[in-house]
Image (tube, rainbow, N blue to C red; front, side, top):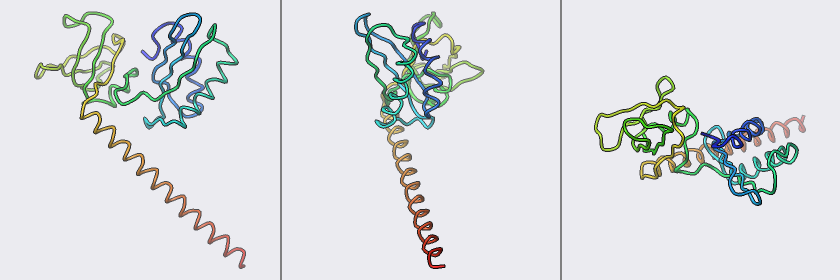
Length: 199
């Protein structure tokens, strides 16, 4: 699901090692548009799920270098690197575990339970199958092989917004603590240096 076409999949295989080497994971890649002007859209994130403007710029530079060298895309194109966003697509099996308990829309490549499209609450993953508590159907949990899923996206709800805000607050708090620890270490180093000079 990270790539939709064979060309997308080939680009994912080319760029995955590049992204990982600079500390990021490609969530989704799409090469869109006609032959004259195409757009390479890449959604990515750090292993902790965060992705800010500086991260996007860093990954964009790394990807541009390999694209210039390998030249896998014919014609002109524009590279866009972004975060997956709050109502993000779910493209990897681990995504369905990470976001269990949240509302999602899923589309399959075949008919199951009489339809291809489903909406409900993610119920996690069991033996490579994605569980879904169907909307409006109490005590009804269905499981689909991950390979059947062609599209999945979180639904923007109050619960999702609250979770996103809590995660951002936690990251900001952690970064603040790290900064304070760094300042403390620097202060101790200064003291040690002063003592050495006095000796």
